[in-house]
Picture 1 (cartoon, rainbow, N blue to C red):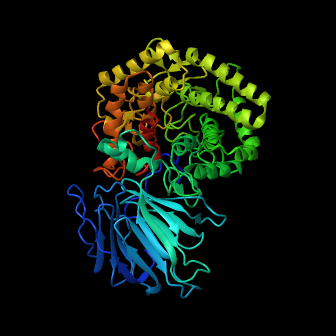
Picture 2 (tube, helix red, strand yellow):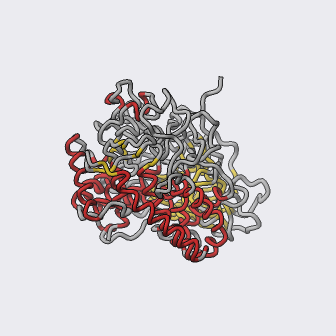
Length: 615
């Protein structure tokens, strides 16, 4: 019997018992530079690796261990900030040596590694291989894919929670092999083709994040500086940005990647973060299916019969970031027809003429089947019964139409620009009167086909609407005050775990995934499912909106009460790995019990954008 397909947003990360691939045997001759400094007093203990006799070089930025017996890289610990946080080995244990290749040598300094090839045995020379254990660190290689699926140089090896290595070639050009699987990420450094003795690669410890006034000297921002790139994870099999290197790609997440990439300084000479986003968008423009789109996963197995309501808005926002952030008018002109097609398909869902995008599922109470839903709801929060007119997706759609107007000005002409400006104004004028709930004083999550408002104090819905200017200015602060007061009323204060998406239980009649494991309890009020996964679970996902909206309405002190504990939690890697119950930490109950499903979910780190956007 085949296993039923499950929503990629619900597939748990493979356990530590999953099969992995061992590291290829590497260098034969080792050159070790003397250690300039030692790890700081506050750093984790960095005991020598006892798997094989080896030599170690340790500084506050880098710790390396290289086997003298098997000629492999045994230990790699990185701290981009120089705080001495180098005691965690991110490498997978090497397999038995298949024979040393004396063509490679390794030089280890206090802030760099050099991999040098001596020019012999060009044909059939074994690549230098680094295999990262994702149970220790969810590393990713960031760069632009060539036609064969290798990553062109320069590139970035990013190690979430620890830091970043910029990879360049000491010869000319080159590309790196890149693969991932259950529990591992592998980077292959091939012998430089046609290069002479002394060619190879250099890996330099670096920090890549946008400048924030005072952040460099404020340890509260360590989690920001070290983890800014965490939201960008490339899946080498799909060749696109994804939930993580071994997980699914979700079209409705692309705007998060693009928003962060737009503010990211150059990754290396000739490489921008937006180049990576642009290549992912081109894959979708070329016909690739992503989660949130029909054809991704078998019909009737928890997928989509049409695009989710936030898919086209997300793609359009990402395209606007890519064109406006880089000033690449040639790219926009080359892809404008496809981008415009996304916008037209989004607008075509407005079947009533009120300007709001609509989803085909009604969102009516009681309309969802038992167990896994045969068709997913309207947006990212795909266990909750969002349908018909969705307040979150329409907030994104408004922003997307404003961006589409800008792109049309640049590439499509005045007629297109006027069309999208009119559409944005129509949506804006309908939004507040459609979703505001006078009974609670906040915006509902969706209005179903039967006209009912479904309001469970959705934090991200209200904050996104305030942030994007869809709430009248004289009502914006009051709505955020009500959300804040409701958090206090229900007793949620542990902001280092993020913010719940909803502050009261979503009733079972409105819950789309009716399984207790995923927040769909057995009681009709769903109190037994509350705080589990998307039904009020604590997560950093979408907490960006609440922080940024509080800033927008002048409640900086309250925004700080969320932002700084959250950045400290990122610094301590509290959203990674597995909790005591064996579940992962990307979602938790309010008491801290792990209830997640990925092990590393990039959406959590979108919250760092709030720090970068502050004046």
